[in-house]
Length: 253
Image 1 (cartoon, helix red, strand yellow):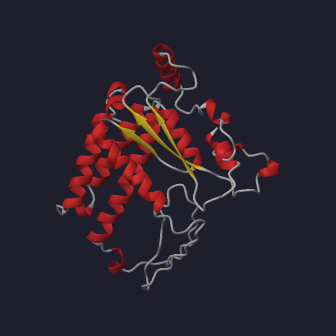
Image 2: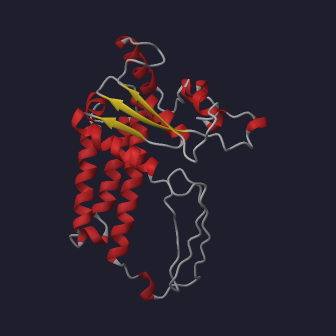
Image 3: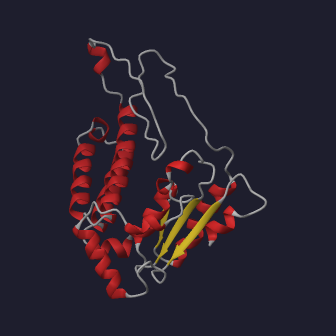
């Protein structure tokens, strides 16, 4: 219904989004706690299972459902911001729906966090100044190479030119660069661990966090007592504790 309203509107704004709220009462399989637990157990037994209800989404929300004939029409993609309240909502479903449209899922643990969560979402919608923007990054200093672009779900391409032989001065570690590498690596690990946890693979998610924490603590900046590394270590530890069991993961997000 919400998609139909956007598709049939007469006046079209440059930015159009949908906000989907769920407390667990409006799921695809009906409002039945036993059925919800059954579905969660089924997802946990097969972490690679793709949610079957994604095929029910219109192509304007889930571009992967577009037929060949409409594949070239990329102008009617509506972004969906999802919010899950309490511990009864299906976080895997909400995350899958938002991810299919290219947006984010927010977990609302208590009413005190509602204002901040909506402020971030609405603020992002009202502050859009450009869409379909292409950026080209070029190293400004000689000898500096761009080795990766952590662009999330946005496309990226990198051309790396490396010398055949390195001098001893080329292998010296810069603590500032090392701490930024740690920050990006931890962010990517947390995102990957979250995806694994939502597929039911809590053991794999914890192993991933543990390995990243070991790499972080052995880095040059962590060995030098960097404050950022200490905060990243604390964050990895906290997230690992939240993923100790499915009950804790659903309760604490």
